[in-house]
Image (cartoon, rainbow, N blue to C red; front, side):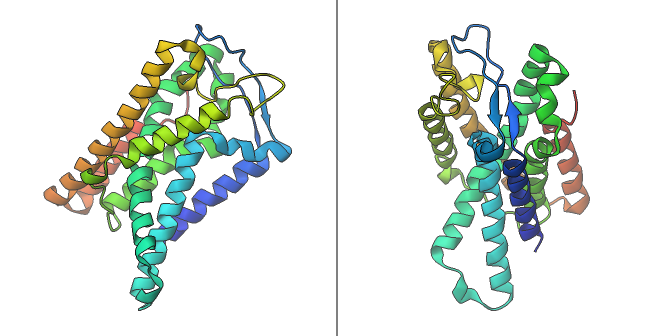
Amino acid sequence: WIRIAFACAIYATTIKNIVEGNVIKPTYLPATKLVPPTLDFTGWNGFKTQGFFTQWSWMLLGYSFLSSGAIAIFASSGQEAMISPWMLRSALISFEVAAPTAFLVSTVVTYALWPIAFKAKGAEGTKNFQKINGLMMHNANVFFVLCEVCLLGGLPVKLSHAAVGPIWGAIYVIFSWSMMNYWKPEHGPVALYFLLDTTLGLKSTVMVLALVAVLLVFYVAFSLLGDALVYLDGGLMAHLLGMAVVLGMTCKFRD
């Protein structure tokens, strides 16, 4: 039921994000040819807030906890017939993608997007990161994943499935590029992240390839972390200490 509670918290945050909407001002690099827009994702446009990679990964993490929680409940209550092979596969693969991606999202926000936004616009540029929705998707995601790995069942992240992370990232890149002219048609092309700004030429290509490579690195690192925890078997206190160290390295709450 803990996993189901995590899934409920994730989807409640998603619904709150859509209903409240947001006014977003993407931060671009100086060499860009794009005109920085003001994106009014409020009212009927609230669903557009789900176009960010953070939200994609957040919702996938929610599905992972929902499906794995349902599997555990069915198994413990003697309803194994309710568990289909595809349910098992989707629960595993969604976690294998969402868990390393959660760490990637939090690390990129903490060490890249947040500092760049603060440098460009000061506290105004980082206010969305400090709202409850932002803090949940950039910090609680890591907490939920660490709870699964360190305190709950510890779903495996298999090295033999390493391609799923970069594939997820590549799908988002294609989606982002295909949507550039639709976020605010009257304004012109819009890149939600400066990393995906195609006007930067070769620099954009390098950043996209680096992003996909980093996804692979995080996948491998997370897989090895899970193996290390099983090998060391340090007990509850060791796992809690490890959680505290990782949370301190990846999470950010204020400027």
